Image 1 (cartoon, rainbow over the protein chains, first blue to last red):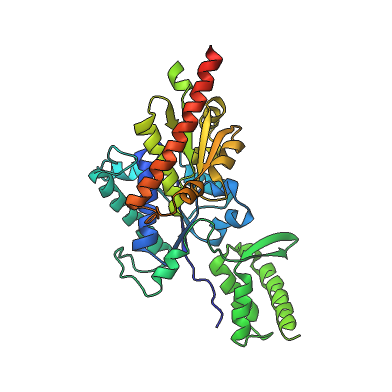
Image 2: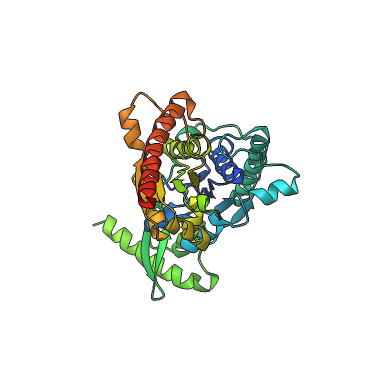
Length: 236
Length: 142
C-alpha cells in the first residue's frame, strides 16, 4: 500500500520578536504541534515564504492553514496570503486575550505565569480550529498516538512536504499536491480505465487541492488522461 | 525617534520555529537587547519584513543590522536584504555550536542549561559586533 500523505493542518505563527504576544504565538503553535495535535499539524517558518522556494510557497496550497498572529498587523495571515494562498483560520493573540480578559504578561523572552496562561488559551483555540478543519474530535488533550513521535519530528521548517506535480488544465499550468501518490495508490488498488475512475481521482485530488466547481469537468478529463499515461508507463 | 534610538543596532534573529537553533538565535537576541547592550541595541519583528511593512523596512534601511540565522536558508539575512537593508554581520548559530559541540540544545521551547549557555556564547559574539559598529560610529563622529 502506498503511503498517501495524511491530510494535516498547517500552522504559521508570526513569532514576532518585539512583543510578548509574538512569543505567545510561537510557543502556542509549538505546543499544538508537539503536545495537542501531533501528527495532524505541520509548520513552516514564516520568513521562508520570502527566503525559500516554490516548495515552501506551496505550503498553504498543500495544507489548510491557520495563521497565528501576535498583533493586529497580521503578518502571518497577510504574508501567507501574499506568498502562498488563502488561510483557513486566523487567530490574533492580543484580540483573543482581550476577549477573555487575560494579560499576555510582561516578558517577551521568558513567559511569566500570565504569559503561560495565555499560551494555554491560544493553544487550545488553535487545537479547536485544527479539529474543526480535520472534522475530528475537538478535545485538545488527546492521548498521544503510537505514530505521534515520528510525525511530530516531521514538523520542522522546510521539512517533508507533499510532492507537487504541474499539470496543464484548460490551458493553464496548475500545481497539484500529492498527485503522484494518489495515482500510485489507485494503481495498486487495481483501478484502471474503468467507469468512475475519473470521479475517484477527482475525489482524492480534492482532498489536497482546491478545485473550482466550474473547472471540475476539465480536471476530470485531464487527470484521467494523466492517469492513463501513468498506467501505460507502469506497464511498460 | 530620539537621536540615541536612531543609532541603535538592530539585532534580528530568524526565530525559526522548526529547529532548536532558531530558538538559540532568539534567546541570544534577548540576552543582548535586554541585558548586555540595552542602550545600544533593539530588535524588530522579522515577520514585518516578510510582509513588507513599510515602517519596518525603513528601520532596517536606516539602522545598522546584525542578523542571526539558525539554518542555511538564512531567512533573517535574506529578509533584511529584500527589505533594502544590509547585515553588517550575519551570525550562524551552527558556527557557535561547532565551537561548543558539548552544548546540546534540549528542544525548541526548552533550551535547557546547555542551550542557554550556547545562546550566551552567541550573545557574546553579537556584542563584539555591536561594539565594533559603535566604535566605527564614534570614529566617524570624530
